[in-house]
Image (cartoon, rainbow, N blue to C red):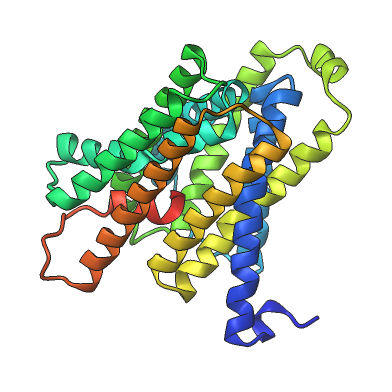
Length: 323
């Protein structure tokens, strides 16, 4: 089998899209499994972030993902990002243990709306009315689905919405860090700072809140294997996403993310069945229609600079990575 860099362009794209899709879909399903079967969420997050840092350093040494020289000032400036990132991952994993994957997907479709509102309130940005209308459609779809999913619980949905707010804050804070140090460090390097600095937080919390002996006795037989595979997929989606950003337009990544979310939603019913009222399916359809509409509007805006645009790109960057 030829190396990736020896393939022709169509095969290279096929390779990276396959890695990206498999990693995205598999990671969500495996994290759901871990949230159910692994007794210590802090230990899971500690191991996943250690693995992420190690594989990033390896990729840097191999010249696949590049980082600039590390600086103490960069690391100190990233501490607030790392502390926020800890709460983002924790609320995500706990929320995933309490609600269904489709409900999580429906709520995460609201992230562009939350990020846009954050930019409008805290950064003074303005958005065209058609984009705000498309985000309102996403909200209506998510609300309709949430009301008709049998896994709904106020505690679970509370964790999901806290996670949504924290993720929005993380996107805005990371944007400030990237704007300040983007000419001195690569996005891979900044992400590695964040992952590395989060490890002590997770390790302390794991030690304080987890009885490792009890965790080991309660752990399901395949939990360790699932955890190790999730570490690999987590790195795989980052590597594939980084490679695709250099090879294709953002529109292609947006479409890939929408397809991945749809496949993840339907695949979750095979592994984690949940009862959904027909109105819930209608809500899911409306939500995804709003996501597609908003994504099309953002891409049209980029193709036609004469259209009104915002100064910030935090929302569009989040869309490209997380729809």
